Length: 259
Image (tube, rainbow, N blue to C red; front, side, top):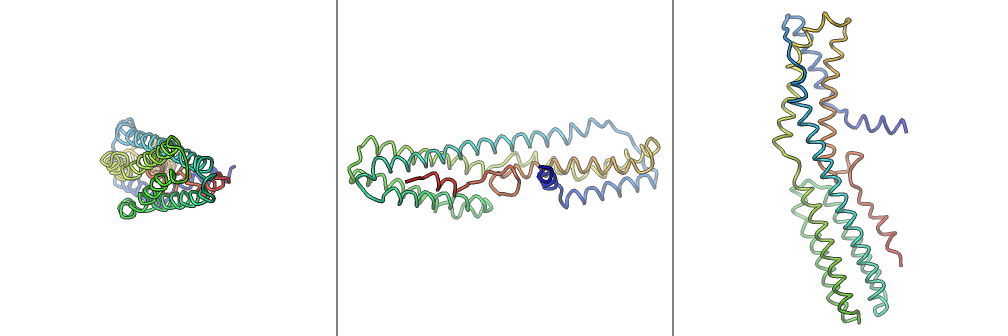
């Protein structure tokens, strides 16, 4: 448990944290050396930096939760489609359920690999996913030849349609992120903050024990950059970088398609 907590913590500590910490130390040292001192209200940090970052984190988390809900719907409709074929079509066509299982497995594998690509590259191979949806739809059109009722075929068509809707929603979450200008605004202030904080840090040297002012300056940078890294991990819930990403778990879906 403790190991997992530390592993999660160090996921948001990276080279940017080290760079900003070094800049904070350098700015504080130089401002103190050359007596460049100034005081400013610290609530400006919350207004200019913390509030936009927290807003972006909340927005990214809600997008991730929405995509997760759509993925649950996608799996449920895929299983419903398979079970429907197994119960309604297979009695008249031996082995058809196993063929559908294979097609669904290929579909989910393709979606999983496509979401791992960069958005520009994913658009180039997206048609392969729709080809698999088209194949499933064509399959349903053939089921009437095997004696399945029209109402049953209609239900199977609906399952394919709902799968496409869920995939389309997930795709939009993948392609369209939280407001880019807001993220850019936050990053500018985060990376300039160590320099801007230097004069204030120098003004507090006489108020703290030796070296404490340096620690506080570094701590501010670590906190802000860590929040920014957390937002980046949540930004794309499909890249399998952060611990909160959506895992497709194709093997579990395959095991759920029992004969």
